[in-house]
Length: 371
Ligand code: SF4
Image 1 (cartoon, protein in one colour):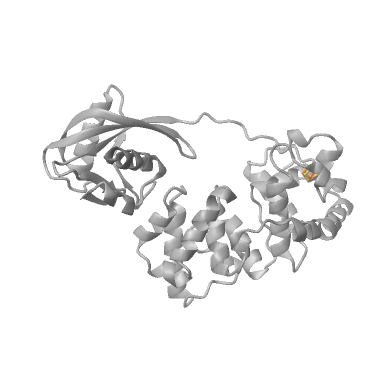
Image 2: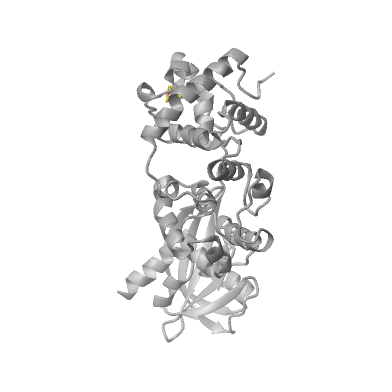
């Protein structure tokens, strides 16, 4: 049977715990990066940084985190802000449900906990958008509760340390690795232990070309000893990524205004603004697709003009080619039928709305064309 977790004798587990305490923690004390959320640490700052860091690189997050903290310096400021402002601060960071959940959770904390961040793992986990990883990170980093985090960095370190050669993306395997991470925690020092493991994975035990010579855990690392570092962790089986051809229109009026629509809160990228359009259907030309989509979404008949641009974009689970056309209204008045709202705005005003990354390319082009 395929093992779901690394098999370690009690003796080996003790040896690992000893080395983590004796070498990894001192290594972390001297090598950790100076990151903005490590300064003036509060539960609120930990929460925001962890939400931003999920699926996103540290370098990308730093300017977002600084801007967000300036605009929403406290939980109360976030809870009382309009959702549009929160989405605008999140613009370009992707996975927008994170921003919507932060806003909703901040309001919940104001209401149910009188603005005081919940202090138990269960209460933190119950907040909207907080999964087991984020709950463990907040519980340990903000309150030093004994919960181990298991992110991509920690998974890589654990697989290499123990020579574990099973696919770590399987649910069962993840549970096994979580249990190992829990057992390796130094009681009472969960926050530091978790950060040290994640930092080791981020700056030393990197996916390619890890710097094993400088690694504080080298003496107990199975992958290093057996020369299998390059083979671990076992890569997850590749799946074909679906692709969609999508059409959108920049509808202009004779005063130079353009038409934008707000996506339904329940849809992907919910609450963001976009140039209206949708996915091409079989046996349909792209101009036909754009005209049909605007009829369905806004109840207008349009004349589709020249193509403005094509935007290619990769989401986490599919890719798109977004074909953007100029258009004018032939008949009808735009109504939000399959969207939350619809507005005419000037090119200058476009920058005040929150758009997805793909639509931001269109905004950039329109602003550049205006000269
Ligand atoms: Fe990773 Fe190399 Fe350290 Fe092993 S010795 S934990 S492979 S950096």
